[in-house]
Image (cartoon, helix red, strand yellow):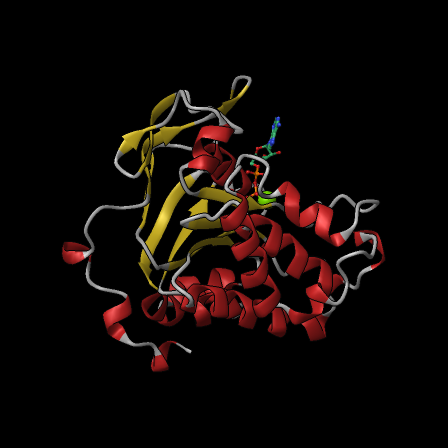
Length: 254
Ligand SMILES: Nc1ncnc2c1ncn2[C@@H]1O[C@H](COP(=O)(O)OP(=O)(O)O)[C@@H](O)[C@H]1O
Ligand SMILES: [Mg+2]
């Protein structure tokens, strides 16, 4: 909960140092359709940030442009201070960005271990890979018990752990997550947010798109709100939770 957050973990913007990942006035188009409009955003090391907004507001497009699946028509995507507009996904993954896609997208006929190893496909440091597998087994003992099982036979909660584990196998500095609670049984949604909080507490920066604004803001440091491709709000999670405009539009209070 934000009330229990150590404020030293979310310093003011003046003393945060260099952002891990940024948008500077990013615009994107699908064909002639203008989607993101002059979007500025930044994610600092160790932060848990959420991106909120209604359907079709451009949230997934934002994640895709950060990872390199969508190319901006203008503006800059900046990773560790370097403009990466012309760098492919593989370069960005190797330099610390990775995504847990919408609906988790596991290879259902592959085993749990095979799925995890796919996350390490750009690496060849065997010792490091082994170390990271052990880290994931510590984090998710359930995953370790199911290594040889086909991923499609896992429960939704277990699939989420494998999807996060696979993303962690690229040793990211920042994890992009697209609607991680979508499609999970209601009882698992709380568990899902606890899991995300736990990974963030381990020091991982997380940029999370969520429909579940209340729960997302209850664990986040900061949040952005997109409306038809424009940033309309950008504030601390606490301030957003208290914002009347926000409460009316996204937190279920008419
Ligand atoms: N590949 C695509 N081609 C054309 N239009 C797209 C494509 N992907 C998304 N869109 C459109 O772009 C807008 C923003 O989509 P998206 O970023 O997926 O929104 P969100 O994730 O906020 O729901 C929507 O109107 C959507 O229909
Ligand atoms: Mg989306």
